[in-house]
Length: 175
Image 1 (cartoon, helix red, strand yellow):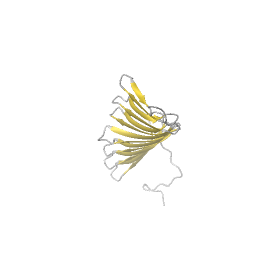
Image 2 (cartoon, rainbow, N blue to C red; image 1 turned 180 degrees about the horizontal axis):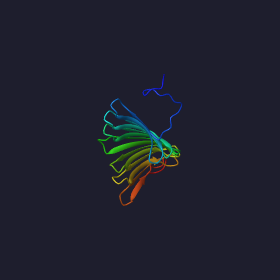
Image 3 (cartoon, rainbow, N blue to C red; image 1 turned 90 degrees about the horizontal axis):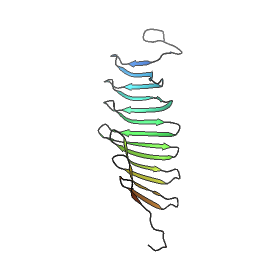
């Protein structure tokens, strides 16, 4: 292969960005440094809308997939303390996050553009399941979990902070 305008051979190329264009000159991919000096590879559809992005955020890997309008729909991220997948839909006000933290796994569901937590299913640091339901402000109102002795308990809390915790009666005693 000879060096020509269409074919250049090199052992290395040094640049601050690379832009890949199609035959019509439309940008289809880019390899750049973000404003925070992190490497990013972005891919664009035929209309120039970013559809996928792979890069580092605070030196942690992250992959984001976008819909045809450029809205983020799925993100996969890894950090020292957590691995996460976040999913949402542009036609919905809700999203779902699946997290595996150093304290255990969790699935969190939120609603509204403010990402207010509405429900969470987790495994606590003792390995026990935990379910939390929240009100429109993201305040916990219902918690279902296990005591240290493995008895289930339910906690109901009103908006003023009052509430009740329910635990099944001990077997063999008078109820």
